[in-house]
Image 1 (cartoon, one colour):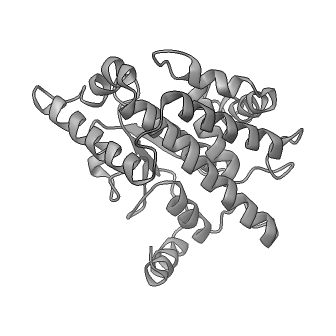
Image 2 (tube, rainbow, N blue to C red):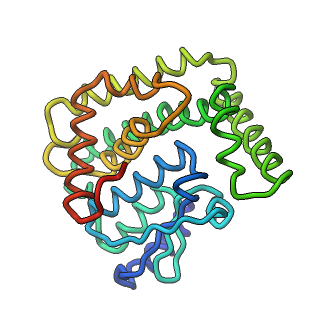
Amino acid sequence: MSLVAEAFVSQIAAAEPWPENATLYQQLKGEQILLSDNAASLAVQAFLQMCNLPIKVVCRANAEYMSPSGKVPFIHVGNQVVSELGPIVQFVKAKGHSLSDGLGEVQKAEMKAYMELVNNMLLTAELYLQWCDEATVGEITHSRYGSPYPWPLNHILAYQKQWEVKRKMKAIGWGKKTLDQVLEDVDQCCQALSQRLGTQPYFFNKQPTELDALVFGHLYTILTTQLTNDELSEKVKNYSNLLAFCRRIEQHYFEDRGKGRLS
């Protein structure tokens, strides 16, 4: 987003308070949404919960095509539609709600670096597993992704998406990686996150930031999504403080607020 566009969005956003009927859109929860999109949606939900901002989750088969960026989740707040965690964080900040204002400049830079790590490693690994691992593609991805649509559109859309993701993987140097190499990348990412978290409740001690929301979205979804095997979730389970971290956020920001367990 350009500086002019960002300033314009900020001005509009700041003019209106957060409404009670704010809505988050994602794909169908039970039969359609894939691991990476579910993780992204949960990260945004966690972030808004941490900001004490109410949001209603609405599932739509065509959510991906409704989104202004073609990615989910997206939120509809007043007359504004904003997609993906980064722009949503900025939009919410313009309304006077920020989780990271208390951090120093060095801490903010560190937070952004770890968020990049999660997006570059965990998100990319999820996409690889969904669209490049043949077992997962054949048993899970194609049928779920195309489930709302009739034949042959279901197959056409799934193959089109697979082609797009494979092209991206090739562009970033992941095209020839093996599954074992991808799982090793996930392990290294989890190790780095575990070391940064340490014994703290959140990554920057006692208060969560958007980094905590992002990490929770991905780790929790990895832990609770049934795949063709448990190799991905086992990488996360090797780090007890990350498991405790996920449980802490689930309990405090979802269960304790009457939303029940997420899984």
